[in-house]
Length: 209
Image (cartoon, rainbow, N blue to C red; front, side):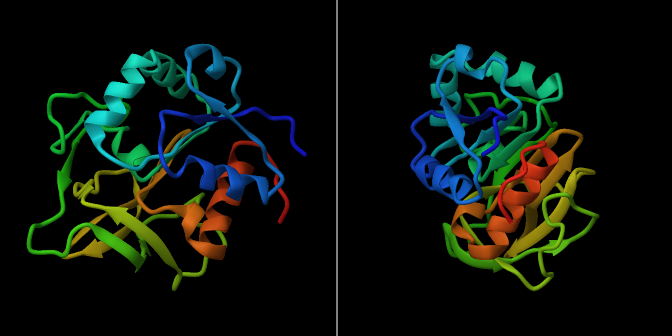
């Protein structure tokens, strides 16, 4: 069992227990972090996410986690954002323009087209556009589980994989110590497990194969 402290940001997200279980199956134990104190000294950081952008940012603010999160990311702590945790990295989201995002990455998260079936829920493929840490050893034909109505549509220079739901959107991004996926690796079978293992290796937490 690794002794590295993995902080799993706890803001009441419904997928938090499933992320914990997925990590535990790999021999990696995450500690729930719901205050600035519980983030101190963490060596890896995971922000899971389901729900509404504004509710997420408001709750992080109420828990006084916004600046500690930004500080940990900026000092180089390996970070994995999942679904809404990816969207929170940007300046803002059109889902709730009244709440700012973390501002680690520049840009605005936008709604998927109204002509598409929403939410985009279920299995979809991703296609790599750049070499990827998270997708190392993941077969090109793999499917991942998505559940969202908003996405980053501007590929920028951080996208490493895209998916399509009427329009292409960022399915995975990587920038220095910041890694994030729009899909749910904890619900994506063996391909998702490989993504989590790759993050653990990137963060220096070697789980079981």
